[in-house]
Image (cartoon, rainbow, N blue to C red):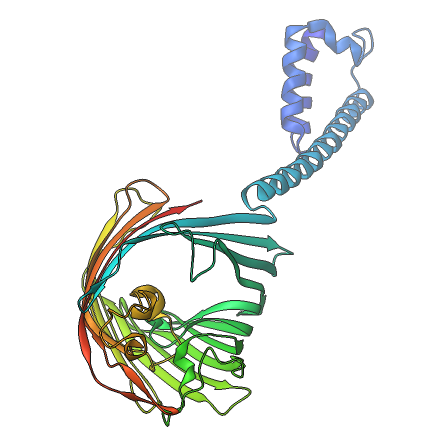
Length: 439
């Protein structure tokens, strides 16, 4: 009778009374289930021969509360161990997904063929391999570098040298508040590369701020460049300090400020101001450019810019480009088609247009068959049109094809220590096919 009373009345009441204890409900239900399956289990707490009293019920409750307390402590220890394991797993995943040292790069296999006046240079093939490193010191600072190997596959030379290894960049990059900073040797390129395309030893600071139509960016750079380009070899009065002259230090101070400002939906205004000065001589040039890019619709993009320097001649340039679609190496099958019209003069700024974008005629040869001979063809301008297409046949690659044609000239001739602009121009055409592989 007492056993029935214990099972049918008092035990449920005890279970209900313990439900007020935090975390006790599941444990109490487990106890009830176990006792239903084994009616004699109650005797392990109190034997059926003893009367059920208030004291015995309190003792049973005390024992259950003690068991629940121990279970809670065990749960806390398990939770702590799981949290610790979670942190270790996150660290391993971070090291796997974002390792301290990243190595990457790309290779370019290039085919060039061009014609200047009545002279056609034989086609040449060039191979470039660029290696990049990115070493994370901590969450804010990294050490980055770029090395390039280039080789003219046609005759196994580049500018008279065999395989060439160059250290293009080596700098520290970090953050101070909302600003990002570079310290060391880094590439400095102006918008659309109209006024500046050089490596600079110095520092760069970049700020960004959100505006209505997007994020505005302002970049300030200063340092030295040891360029060998003819661009800076001319004073504004036309006097020449030969870029091959050992007396020329080629040690130019560079100050640059450029920015991007979103002025409307899908439209950005870009600008650049640069100042270069030979630290050893009084050769100096100031340059500026302004332009914009806008999306006319989802797939059509228009870009345009003008540039000018304070040199006395060959100092103005402009470009306009219309592009359909966009070739992205991470999206196989993507492509773009574009047409670009530009007038580029070599005294507009410190850029490599005549060294990379189109072939500089003096890179063709020192051939007497050239119109006027070598010194008559130190070209100062190109005015023409380019049509091109870029394709992504497979992921992490890009095939680039373009054909450029127009007038090249404005040559300069030696006249004692002065050079003059003859204004002569010749037909020029240039075809390039380039296959890029990213790794």
